[in-house]
Image (cartoon, rainbow, N blue to C red):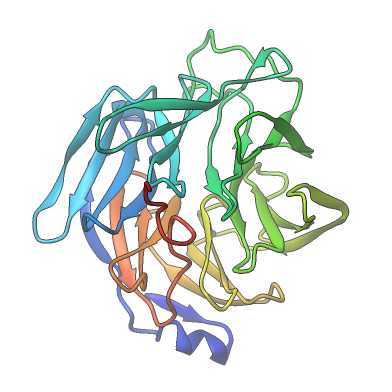
Length: 312
């Protein structure tokens, strides 16, 4: 059963016999995982992270997978900003930066908070106004080296202002903050906690200034009752507000009210995902050591949000 239907509304997204397509494997290094897929629409290819291979991979339809870049400071989550740059979280570099894919020029976005190094930047998104949000879980062997000691005293979620001049820790009470995603209108920020004791997704209302209404904090989905293999990690929304999140047995699909309407079953242990192809209707997802995709019935939110800004 490739797709588990839990509510009839799931059939608009996928039927029981909708199958994933396996595109390649052998990435992530001996400890895994493959991570950070992001579609480069104007070029027609996908980039993704081979974390412990310390390289960035490229999948081109009709051509397969090749190495795009060696030496990535163990890059993890990736997205794009309104300038079209590749925005990356780096485990070993303890930073978030933006790389011009044409020139290779790299601009630092964040590498510290209040004078102390970040812990282990993990996943990142860019709001339509250009502000950058990222998660920073604690160091963890073997994902980080033995001498990679924490300097921040909590596992935080951060926001960098559109002009890059201000960084705020917007949430500080997660154990292992991981994936994050905006609702289609950016009025809600979803953040999940991958720790074994939590395995849930929380939702926050977003204020006009980009900060979070902490009083609106609520558990959007709790995955603890499902003992199948898998945990919350990467998340994305479609244009109708359905939330897709890795979880037990594969990728969970939740409607905007938080109801679990179906699961895309996968043996590849999905870790992170992103929309792609010209119509944004293909969900590309990284497994523990693989890259895969599945065609779905509702398009996803494009990356970056809105057209790429052009120079005057």
